Image (cartoon, rainbow, N blue to C red):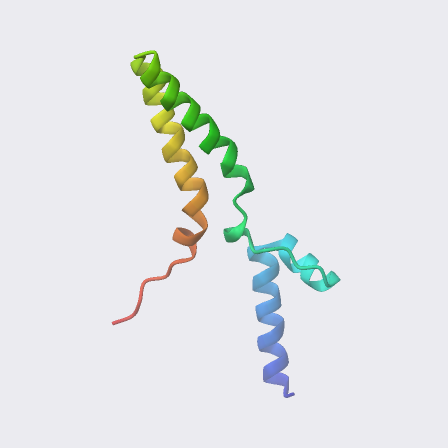
Length: 93
């Protein structure tokens, strides 16, 4: 390996450490975690609460509860898909 290759690898390592430090540390230890954009565990409580709020809002005919359920559903969708949107780069013509 040449010096330029070592510089590129060090740059990639630094970028990975900046983007997802927990993944980089686990990778160095030999036990890598899934990258942040694939971790969706924190979104499931929003999905459950949204489903309950929408169901109760429809059953009780309560507009405010129904609207809050819709807001929670949008929040859950954002939390599930936000990693993909953040890392998408525009294509060059």
